[in-house]
Length: 167
Image (cartoon, rainbow, N blue to C red; front, side, top):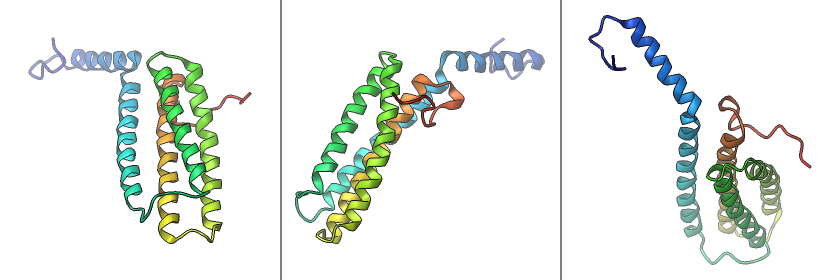
């Protein structure tokens, strides 16, 4: 009997077969894969938003406020490498490192946004563009961390902050 044999009178067997299919999907990690694909899709949307935010700028982004943003961008690029290693190569340590990097990124973005808010030299346009890009980079970091959590955590615990002690 097939899963979708709806004309059968053997409903208990059909239900048991359906539960078996669900159990096999859980056992093989298909739900984790769906979660990872969802996170990757969000990262793609954020990448488009970063480009759009950059285009809002009235002039090239230069000055002392830009260097920390470039450093954040570079760290996110490293996080992509850790996500690949964690997921494709099944390296749990790379995934854990990525999650730790995200925790630091959150703190750094908060500090950066406060520094922007306190900087009287910025135009409104500069402040908005820089803050928006920083926030979007933080969101990319978050989604990469969620991908990593799918590698190292059981399904019911993915998308959570790491619970292990930092060295």
